[in-house]
Length: 121
Image: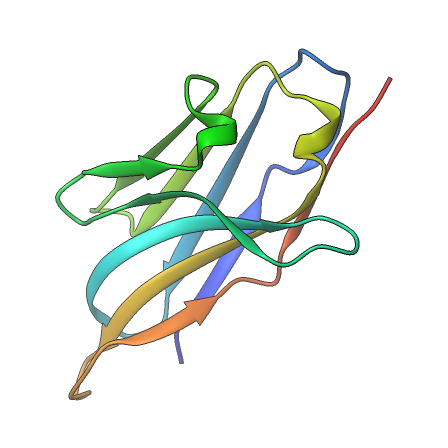
């Protein structure tokens, strides 16, 4: 069973930085797209940033120029460097990965448990 374990959330002041990490494990044969989503209170979950296994990245307009997504394919890990954080960045951040396990026939979507990011003075 594929597991995604996130770390790096917390409380930070406006203008500060945080780095989120998400490590995938559990019999993984292949990983395709990986990404970060967030859900603010009372809002739907939205894509923050995504990356293909070739390293191509995409970002929500609201985070362009402030957030950077990267991945280490050897470690099955994706990172999100968040700079110049704003109060509106507050939410639960979820890691997502498309993975195929050994013996499996297709890719499935997997989600982490979420990590809280709070931007407040």
